[in-house]
Length: 320
Image (cartoon, rainbow, N blue to C red; front, side):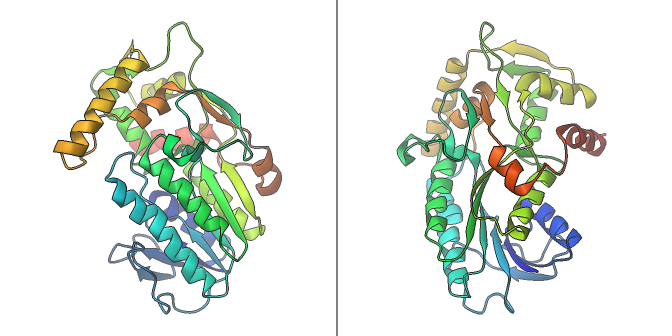
């Protein structure tokens, strides 16, 4: 198997490379950096906001995994369009012109999010209209899914939920920064149900992506560890093992959401889209339950590669 992997230098991409090599595959990595940051077999430097030249990739490939994306919670909308929509069009067009090999597109579970509790979401759950999605990232990932739906060859869309693990630069670092200040805001009602959520270990996500290639899967799959947790006890447990024991303060989500909206407005108009301390999307993630029915994935792609307990152990060892 010779795999073309876009976003090969990234958090998830690096794990996909390692998992592919464990299967005996060759990996052609594609990224914007001058050189590869891992041991891909061949590396192609290219910015996917521009079309891929016909001869960009040396030799044929047996499958394409499109993992490259702008996954930041905050950036100029045009940056999300270039990285998530234009890039997907360019990858799909290049692949279609080169024999239409199987294409696996890494999307996001955020395409389903509403600012409300959502439980047991399935691949058949209705997707909100684009203008009702919570941020530009979710909107552009949804548009990218429609691009892939038009691909002429076999294709898969996977929607990972809250990918974390050693090397994560999005989820845990933000929580750690809050905890290091001695206080962890809790955005759930004292008299309401706990915020319950699904998470995905990065090795599990990488394993599922490559399983989709190896098993010749088609269609849509949600990716989680199939182990929903109560969010705040889970976070506080990790922090305690890392030696951080912040005080908790229950804060009404509506108050934080209003402050986040004001911060976004200031950022967009006065600060050149510098990321605010928290976004409305972030408030929703920390205050709304999101769980997923993994029946289809477990049936077609098998069990998660790494349990949440093992994932947390690895995090603690890495930060120890």
